[in-house]
Image (cartoon, rainbow, N blue to C red; front, side, top):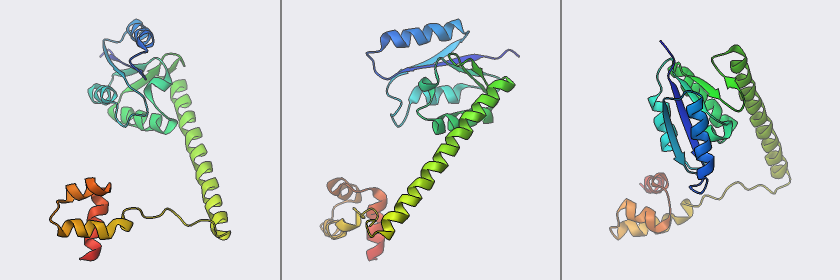
Length: 187
């Protein structure tokens, strides 16, 4: 069975038409028979076309992107995406890096990227813990103030007035979980 090449192209804004066209051209030249494309920032919470591409690929397929930053917003994001691909038996090819997870070298490079990201994250968390411990010792660390709980009286007053949970949440700018936590604490 021949691998089906599935492309994914993304630009951050609709003004980047030339960038999107270049990606589409490169993906077609690489042999992609189906291409998912979108024009939105990678910091957007959801990228519907990427989600569709990840849902579409099947075992034996290859997901192709032109550049790493078109696919993942961070190395942790890359690790999550590649884990999902691996579980489906799908390889990843990044054209500008000449990285192909179907090869031993490609797998090694991807694992190195993931390991470095994990190492960086652990160092950052360690520095954060040390900073918090020092701030606590110096009496400068109080932690985050519970914002929703300070509105408990208003939540209960609005509830007594007959407002719905959704109306109370919208009025006070609190989450659903915070609303129910406050109501539960009173009960």
